[in-house]
Amino acid sequence: MRGRIEDTVTVITGASSGIGRAAALAFVRAGGAVVVAARREEALEELALECEAAGGQALAVPVDVTDAQAVEALARRAVETFGRVDFWINNAAVSLFGRFEATPAADFRRVIETNLLGCVHGARAILPRFREQGDGVLVNVSSGVGKMPQPFANAYVISKHGIVALSDCLRQELWDMPDIHVVTVLPPATDTPLFQQAGNYMGRAAEPMWPVYDPETIARAIVSAALAPRREVIVGPNIRAAIVAWRIVPGLFDRLAARVVEAKHFQDRVVPPTSGNLFEPMPESASVHGGWKRPRQRPSIAWMALAGARGMGVGYGFAGRGRRPR
Image 1 (cartoon, one colour):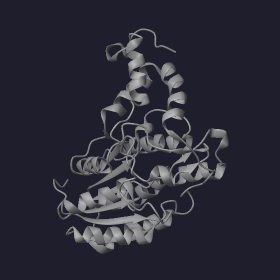
Image 2 (image 1 turned 30 degrees about the vertical axis):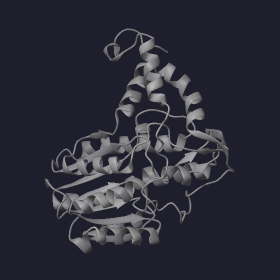
Image 3 (image 1 turned 60 degrees about the horizontal axis):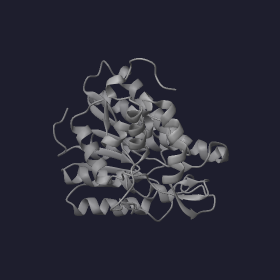
């Protein structure tokens, strides 16, 4: 496995904005070439020019990751252009907010098709090529909610859990290929345009819950995972705390979740029902940042649940001992 980004080739899906765009720039600035893929051709072309201005090579390929044949063509074109692919980043994602019974079935399905099956299509396209090369790193970008539940984002959470499971299964199947690695990256809430573009049936505008991380922080974690692959990369202590809290006191966590998420994940601003960018990309918001960073923010459900657990006399040392609270 290569110990540097220089002279490597990386394919990144969902690269037109947010984490994907930040990751493309990070790989280029480290000396690598990138193949950037997403639905928005104009945004990709702008990104390719930005990568080239930074001194790197970039190829823009418009792709809808729900189309397995298009993703296969993406892999083929990357290899034809650069000769090989060293890193493949499955990052494309859309989101959907609303109570389970209020979200249209078609919207729900589209989230699963984009987030989870998009990763499946990417893995199917690149793993045969990694096997032929004898090495490669597949990075699947999940989410902190890929390890725990969250209300009002059912399809998104299910898709991110599925990505974690997909990575786990692939690692087992690749036991005989020690130089092919599968890494799952689990970011926290990130300052990207995802929330402005999401499908929304809550009746209130969505926003990320505190603490909100910079996309560049997640991009650095992805680059690090490519260079030094490990099973999972959980970004941020708040995500770890939330996962531990849910496992230790799931009943308390569940009771807090609905109230806190509804209060802190949605603004008072009323918005009409929308499918957002689920079926068609939005021309706006082709940027790294979503404008969500604020100087003063209130603690998230992670810390509230953990504080509640400690207040009940439950701590890390009690995990797995005695009776688990309901």
